[in-house]
Length: 240
Image (tube, rainbow, N blue to C red; front, side, top):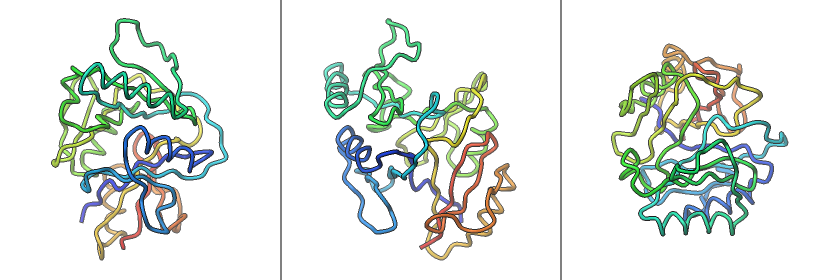
């Protein structure tokens, strides 16, 4: 059976602090369970959780992926920005133009994210996290569409986007040029399989689609570590 997107994982220097920040910004509750580490849960059980994993490596350069948060009105956008700043976020300049309607911020660990203007039609109806916007090739967009069995909702000029058949957050890839990768990504996917599923068969399927396995055994918490076609790390959890 196909694995599903269980979590977006942040490598964090202060996992508990970063979890409190994102819980406050999004209004998501903390997760229960001893094997989940520090995590927050979405309001919709069909969505993914966000996990915060301890890392001693400081952030260098811009992340390959960031959240685009949605707004229902200009006032709502201002409230989200103000809440993020009160919780320890800050404004940053990544080359955005003054006439652009989105606001670019960084969380307390330096991870970039955007608060998008209310009239953005592409993110309409997606929820509080409208998109996980990634640097990446068209090939990796096709890979993840097949890996998750999420349909392509955008495929133009080498830019791609996928979305669960149930709706919710879109995952987008901007196409070339893709910045060179330096070190491990601070944001990564964690996949999970239903109870009793054959993980070896699923890993074989992912390899056949273009993934690479990077270890010979199980990593922390029974996670098999892999790379997608663009070299981005992801993990496959042991079925419960």
